Image: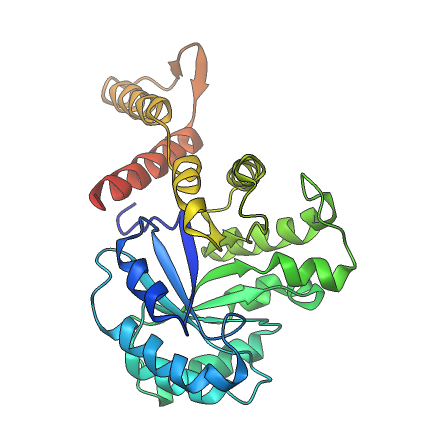
Length: 289
């Protein structure tokens, strides 16, 4: 379970805003998405590209994973964004509205031609009905693609769905993408929560996302980081239970016993693997501080 990277909280930061990029250096988010897309007006795209690429290449963000969200494949800025991002070498390039494996291949080719280091990965945003129905093909299209990012606002718009507590209209799409991520060994991040003042609603959605199996959540405001980090981290009780399960299993194996119980419950390999995953995540989070 080595190499686990916490991505509990992944914060969008507007690429045109110098102060925001500076502030991001102090925020306890696991990862940052320096945004050239929605957060930047058309006449500010080129200046933002320069600023964001300089920030991503600076090494000033400590243990935070720094990614760049480029403009969409069908925009006039996309190619120049990818070329500049390839040179800057961020942890990843986040690409909106990825709808097919062929698009992933084109992004990968453009990064290679642009001289991107192997360490620069692709994070594909899946946010349309087509993407939901082809999520497995998208996720499996490239080794360089490591993360799926849910674009729930666009998905709701395309579905003509309403935003309701519990997100019932979106659950089909969320489930398809989770299945695709787990089937292909990729990380998957939940979509944003739009009402930055409703922290109770936000925390409830974080909890739902964690229960579903998401690795973390994308955020639009620094005030969302703390509750998100807390919800997506293993609790002290979960860590203690994980240690107990692994110890009991190891002891039984050493004694040649085939049956293991912890607190009256039968323990199998799948419980041990889950316990190891929880411990690896807890250790990785502790290592960030």
